[in-house]
Amino acid sequence: MVQPYKHEPFTDFSIEENRQAFLKGIKTVESYLGQDYPLVIGGERITTEDKIISYNPSNKEEVIGSVSKASRDLAEQAMQAAVEAFKTWKKVKAEVRADVLFKAATIIRRRKHEFSALLTKEAGKPWKEADADTAEAIDFLEYYGRQMLALKDGVPVNSRPNEFNRYNYIPLGVGIIISPWNFPLAIMAGTTVAAIVTGNTVLLKPASTTPIVAAKFVEVMEEAGLPKGVLNFVPGSGSEVGDYLVDHKDTRFISFTGSRDVGLRIFERSSKVNPGQIWMKRLIAEMGGKDTIVVDSEADLELAAQSIVAGAFGFSGQKCSACSRAVIVEDVYDTVLNRVVELTNQLTVGDPTEQGTFMGPVNDNNAFKKIMEYVEIGKQEGKLMTGGEGDNSKGYFIQPTVIADLAPDSRIMQEEIFGPVVGFTKAKDFTEAIEIANNTEYGLTGAVITTNREHLEQAREDFHVGNLYFNRSCTGAIVGYQPFGGFNMSGTDSKAGGPDYLLLHMQAKTTSEMY
Ligand SMILES: NC(=O)c1ccc[n+]([C@@H]2O[C@H](COP(=O)([O-])OP(=O)(O)OC[C@H]3O[C@@H](n4cnc5c(N)ncnc54)[C@H](O)[C@@H]3O)[C@@H](O)[C@H]2O)c1
Ligand SMILES: N[C@@H](CCC=O)C(=O)O
Image (cartoon, rainbow, N blue to C red; front, side):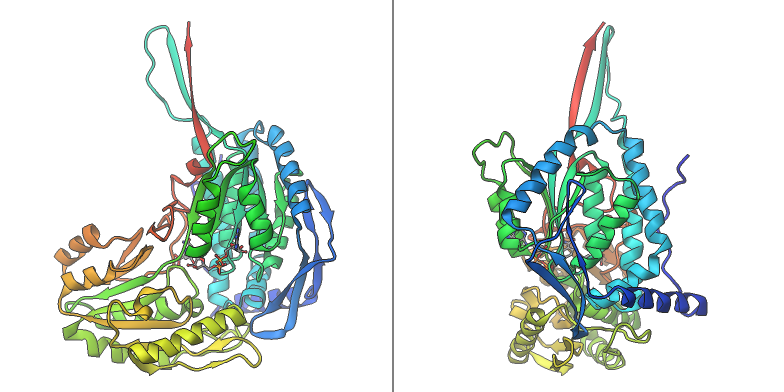
C-alpha cells in the first residue's frame, strides 16, 4: 500500500549534521568533476568526438564535466530505439511503472545532498535553492507515481442494461522532452517521468549548460530498473537535434519548458504534418514570465518588501516565476521602495558553495551580457536605486538591482530579463495596480499583498495569471500543493505537479461491449 503523498521537506542547514552532509555532497561532486558522459540510446552507451562542456558559472575555469553530443544520425537512432521500446513499455502495468519512480525517488533522497551540491556547482544554485530543486525532483517522482496509480483503471462511465462501457487512458507514443537549465534537476526529471510513467518512451534533450545533472539522473532511472530504450539521453544543439526531433514524423508529443521564443518556434514547427506522419502532435509548452507583486495601500509593508526581495533575487531572478515587477499603490510606494532597497543592500552575492551566499552567479556569459544590457536600458527608462554592477572576470556575477519610477509599458516592465533586476511602478489605486499587472503578454505568476478582503477577491477574479499568491511571494510552487503553469505567452498552462498533468501525456479510449 502506497502512503499518501507529502512533499519532501526542505533541509534545515542551521543543524550541524545537515550542514556537514551538504559539505560532504560538495566533496563527492568534486571527486568526479571533469568526467565524460555518453549518450544513452536503447540502453547502449555511445561516446562521440563532439562534446558539450559544462562549466561552473561561478568559476568559468572549472569544468563540471562533458557529455557526448548527438548528431542527427544519432537522434534518429534514438528515435528508433524509443519507437521499438514503446511496443513493450506501453503494456507494462501501471503499478510497475510507478514503482520505478518510487525507487528513483528513494535513490535521489539517499543522495540528496550530492545532487544539490551538483546543482550548486553546475547551475550556480545557493544551498537553499539547490535543496529546493532536489526536493522538487523527489516530489515529482512521488506525486506522479501516485497519480498514475489513481488513473490506471480510467474513470467510471455509465452503462445501460446489456451494455458495459469503459473509459481508460492509454499512452501516446514517443515524446521529446526539452528542458531548461534553471531547474536542471526538478523540471528535467519531472517532465521526463510524467511521460514515462504514463507508458510513453522518450528522448531527453537537456539544456546545454546543465547536462551533467541530467546524465546523473539518467543513471538513477537505470538503477531504478527502467528498461532499455524507454529513456534515451540525447544532449545536443537546440537548432540541430531539437528541430530534427520536433519535426520528426514519429514524434507523438513534445514536452518543452523554456523561453517564449523557442516555445513559439516549436509550436509552429510541431503543427506541420510531415510525410508519413499520421497524427497531430501534442505540445506541452511551459514558457516565460513577467511576474508582478502588487502592493496595496492597506498592507503589511514589511511583508511586501520581503516578498519582493525574495521573489526578485532568489536564484538571481532566474525563475520563470521571479518577481520582476513591483506595482505599488502610490500612498505606500516610497515606503516599500526604500525598504526593498535596504533589504537588497543586505544580500550577499558570491560563490554559492559557501553556505552564507544568498545569490550566486547568472547562467553564462550570454545571460550576463543580456542582463547587463537590460540594466543600461533600466537606467534610461527609470531611476537606478541600487545594484547595476556586474563582474564576469571569474564567474558571472551581477548585483541585485532595483529600478524605480518606470512607466508600465517600459521595456523593463514588459520584457523577461531573467536576472536579478526588479522594476517599480506606481499605481493610483488598487484597480489600476491590477490593470498594470495584467498588461504584459505573459500570465504566469503574480502576488498581491493586502489586508483588504475585497481587494483579494477582486484580484482572484481579475489578476490573469496561472499561479496567484496572496500575502506571500510569487515563487516556490510545491508539487501537489500549487500546480504550476501560466496563461497567454507563458504557455499551455499544463499545471506541472497537478492532478491533470499526467492526462496531457495520454489519450482516452472508450470501449463499449454488448452482452
Ligand atoms: N513556465 C515554466 O514552467 C518555466 C520553467 C522554467 C523555465 N522557464 C523559462 O525558460 C527560460 C529559461 O530557460 P532556457 O534559457 O533554458 O530556455 P531556452 O528556450 O533557451 O531553452 C530551453 C531548451 O530548449 C532547447 N532549444 C533551443 N532551441 C531549440 C530548438 N530550435 N528546438 C528544440 N529545442 C531547442 C534548449 O537547448 C533547452 O534545452 C525562461 O524564459 C524561463 O521563464 C519556464
Ligand atoms: N516552479 C518554480 C518556477 C519554475 C520556473 O523557473 C516556482 O514556482 O518558483
